[in-house]
Length: 295
Ligand code: GLY
Image 1 (tube, rainbow, N blue to C red):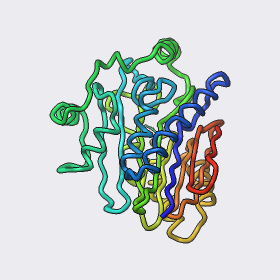
Image 2: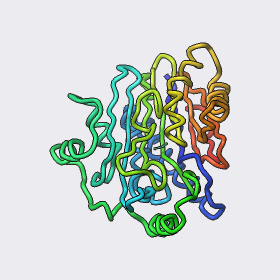
Image 3: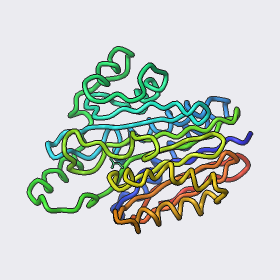
């Protein structure tokens, strides 16, 4: 079985001076996941490691560096889905967990499947995950944007930077895993949850068929159950690139007028990625081929 991994750093309107940082962050995430896969680690380990790197990189809207809510706080969501068992772990509305993807991974092990808010934070404490002050997740760039938005409340939702990170990997044992993590949308209402932790919306993984991870305006993605829809296109025999193109075409042209992107990986290592936003940083590596990256 050929190992493979694809990661993305969020669809959005990335400022020119930040594009290299997005690509560098995706390449660092790819390298971490790839080196684990090469050493025989599981796709779960590879996806968790790749997403953690992006959560810790302040350029991305995930973990440290996330966008702020209308109250000026950070609220984090994440999920991981195991394509062999179809088990998943989802977490939402976290304010004090430094790496939500690691909590999602722990939730996947049971007994619950989706934990939010205070219960999720308590579960994180009980399982020894790293906690932090909410202010430790806030970077000066995002605080300045929040201050500006507060003074001009009519600005559009995806009016700057970035949205969500994600990864899909296949390990040497043939399992396929999808994972993602986000701070959500800029100036969101406290308590708002987007597509990211919702199975079938922000992510889907079936080791027999393939996996998809979405990024962008979560409300529109959720209405279409876009990740499941993309995997269904693979089920019908579509190439991953054609499936990604059609999924984003549907997102853009439905009544939703949605904006976003998606990455797709088939069980035999074919990749697809598409966006209808100005940018979406990505990086991918498939055994036997040179790595690719772009934005
Ligand atoms: N795509 C992330 C969100 O809407 O929350």
